[in-house]
Amino acid sequence: MAYVGKYYDKSDYRVYCLVGDGESAEGSIWEALHFASFYRLDNLCVVFDINRLGQSQPTALQHDIATYEKRVDAFGFHAITADGHDIPELIKAFHDASQVKGKPTAILAKTYKGKNFPGVEDKENWHGKPLGANSSSTLEYLRTLAKKERKDLNLSISEPAGSVPTVNIANIKLSSPPEYKPDDSVATRLAYGTALAKLARSNARVIALDGDTKNSTFADKIKQVSADNYIECFIAEQNLVGVAMGAACRDRTVAFVSTFAAFFTRAFDQIRMGAISQTNVNFVGSHCGISIGEDGPSQMGLEDIALFRTVPGATVFYPSDAVSCERAVELAANTKGICYIRTSRPNTSILYKNSEVFEVGKAKVVKHSADDKVLIVGGGVTLHEAVSASKLLAAKGVHARVLDPFTIKPLDAAGIIRNAKEAGHKIVTVEDHYPEGGLGEAVLSAVASEKNIVVKKLAVKEIARSGPPAALLDMFGISASAIVKAVEELLR
Ligand SMILES: Cc1ncc(C[n+]2csc(CCOP(=O)(O)OP(=O)(O)O)c2C)c(N)n1
Image 1: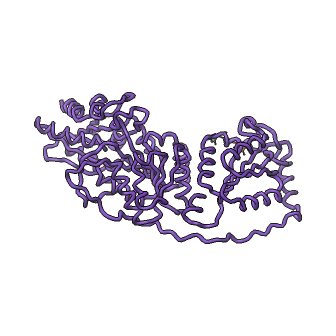
Image 2: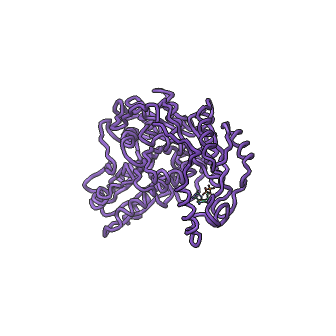
Image 3: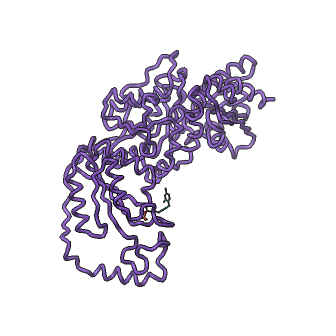
C-alpha cells in the first residue's frame, strides 16, 4: 500500500502497520522491512507493540527495546522509542515519523499487555481468555476511565489532506489479439509475458511483481511498456505475495504476481489470508511439473494445482497453448477473487485459432469423432501428449476424444460428463502434477455422482529427477506412449 501511495498514486497519504512483538519472530516481517527500506517508503510507519508477552509465554526479547532498535536500524528504518501508553508521547512520535524523509519509520512502543486491568496486567496466561472472576473489577476500571476527562490532551483531528487519482481498472482488454501462426511453437510462460505487456498497454494500472525470476516467468515483458509497472521483490516470496495484495487492495492496481509454481508453496499462508481479505491478486506459476527437465525436482511445481484449488473462490487456469494463455491472462485481469495461471516451460504447438473465444469454466474439445471410445483430459504439456496419443491410437483403429479443461476450477463438469458419455463412458486424465489434488482428482469429483463412468489417472507418482523433458515424461508415465498404454488397459 505504501509503495502504491509513493510511486503510483504519488499522493501524500501515509500507511500505518501494527506489528505484535511475538509476531515479529516471523521471517516475513523482516522481508517486509527490507522491502520498505530498499524502496525508501518514507510514507510508511510501522508500530511495534512490544508488550513482552506472546500467546503461551514471554517473547524471546521481552522488553529489550534496545535490541529491537538495533535491528530496525540495521534494516534501514528510522527508529523511535516510545511509551506505548503515553498518548502525547505517541502523538509526537507519529509527528516525528511524518517528517522523516528517505526511509520508513518504526515506532518501538513499550507496552504492558492488559495495562491497568486488575490482576491481568503483564501476567502470563491471559492471551485470548475471558476475564472470568476479573470481569467486574475490569469493567469498573473501564467505567472510571470513560468518565475521566482527558484535559491533558488536545486532540483535534483534521480531515485527511491530499488527493488520490481516480483509477478505472474495469474491463481491461489485450491491446491486440493473439497473433500466432499455426505452426508456431511457443511456451505458455512466454505468452503470459506477451499478454501482460498487452494489458499494461491498455491500462497503466496493470502491474507485475516477481521474486527474481522475471526473465524465466517472462514478467519482465511488462518493462517493455514501462519499467515503472514492474516491482522487483527479490527472493522473498511471502513478502512478494504480501506486496501484491497491498498493491491490489482498494482497487488501486491490477496485480500479477509470478514466480516458479513451486515457490508459491512458501507463501501459502499469505495466499489463504489473501482469500480471507478478498484480494483480487492474480498469481502466475511458471515451470510447472517435470517438463522443466534438467533444473531438477527442487524447481518443479507438482503440487500447485492442489494448493490453489483449495483456496475458496479461486479461479485456476491451466492454458495449453499461447492463444489460450493470452486469453487466460485477460480473463484473470477481469475476474474477482484470487486467480491462478499455471504456465509451462517448454515450447508447445498452437492449438487454437487467434480468434478463439475462451470462458472461465468452459472446456474445449480439441479432437473428436463419432467413434470415440475414450475421453482423454490433459492440461499444458500433457494435453499435447494426449493429442499425440490419440494419433497413435487412431493408427491402431482406436478413436479417442481429447479435452482441454482450460480452467481446473471451476471445472466444466457438464462438458466433461457429456463428452465422457459420448466417448464410451471412459476417461483417462493425464497431468504433470502429483496425483493428489490435481486435474485427475478434479475430474473424479466432477463425475463422482455419475453411474458407469470410469476414470483412470496418470500423474507423477514419485519424486522426480533431472533429465531431458521427453525422457522424464516417459519415465514418470505421463507421455503419449503412457497414455496409449492406459487407454488400451481401460478398453481391454
Ligand atoms: C502465523 C501464526 N502463528 C501463530 C498464531 C497463534 N497466535 C495468535 S496470537 C499469538 C501471540 C502473538 O503475540 P504478539 O504478536 O506479541 O501479539 P499480542 O501479544 O499483542 O497479542 C499467537 C502465537 C497465529 N495467529 N498466527
